[in-house]
Image (cartoon, rainbow, N blue to C red; front, side):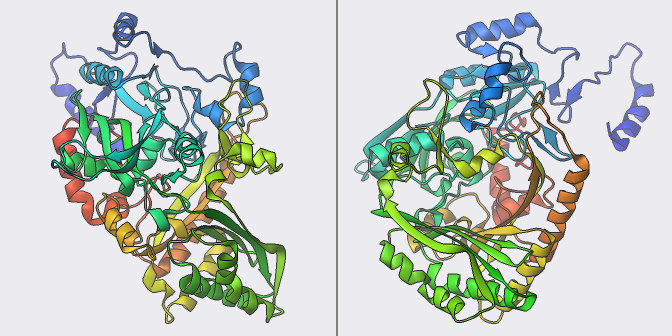
Length: 581
């Protein structure tokens, strides 16, 4: 209890009747009860709910602490698919000074929208906090909360392609578009497999294959190729959602349009529980390819010049729908390239990089520590585990559990995220004006100064400047901060430590190191954002302690979102950190 609350309580207590009972076991401004409070559900209450939802209610546990599951947990704890299948775990272990992954009081393994509607009505009557989880990747901790009822959509993971989809309520004769119906519990690898590997079309999803489709879209939803195909939110055509009143609604541009708009980037879990999504699909490009390399400068001055040239090269050759992903800048004067391209042949992609390669070759101040590498592959096999295994490629890692779906793969680099202890996490959209000739040197200097505090990445796919007019128009019709339309990149500056799941052998939560990481992150962020004061942030990848978070996430869209919240969740049944309401 903070000092202000304590003082207020001290002033009120003497005025209460002697028979009044002060309930100290509440949270969320008194909205939710905690165990031990008057009115907290009894075992009989929980059992009654369990019968109503067909026996799909249980008590979630940390499998590392249960003797019956510990051995299996230790064998697979580095597997994101395994972690996602455990209702007592989340993909991130903790966030310094913010939250720690904690099992809920009960979990509903929902199989239908009716299951969820029943649970929402029950929890509202009994003042039990609700938590919604699909993939469990929330950095803000929205995937878990102690003393809550977890609505877990993992089992609702179907993916179905349709050739011609028309939203409900559309005018008679409306022309349908190719689409895919995706269950709220599906991960992006499930959608990529069905739509791309099998179906031969493209769906705009996330870079990490185990991210849940629903939370991704609620937060906005950037993928590796968003400059080409937009965001998850901008490709959403319709959704089935259960609102705070327990109603199951089909929402789109014609039915409950304000709720539909709010679901498109208005913040995960803030307006209802999504049970099904329908996304636009696209013609699949012939090829997707990658670019990698590490280049090092021999002095501070040459490093600034290198960064400035990278920015100019991006502006002139890569800031278009064909290119995405990131470039990392490090304080020891090196740059890591990690870019993707689509819709170009390998020769065309090489030609796009040739001016930069020639610029570097003419200057002895620079050394390729890791050689420049560029390669294309058939786009249909980009998320095809069997293809990678056929050629002995190890950067695609299978779900190694017996009986796991054969298509389940994650990128090898994502394994290090499992259970991580986030020390600090910040993001900032950088406006296109910083690429102009009269500002690019200033930006380069800011990047170099910031990288000396802590290295970081510019994610060019997470800013839509350079996208097509059609992509920008669709993104404009979402709840995200309109600043994203003019941002050429999202800077992500973050720091973290090893997994901190309780029960993990050798686990050590080093808070001294976490404080150092937080300090370095904040100093780096402060130096970079001197050139972009008031920069917006990406809801799904942002600071738990984000200042002025509503303006940062949604900009001028805040009043409209607040109105939708008042209409569809007036009691604040759905509450997440840094969310609307």
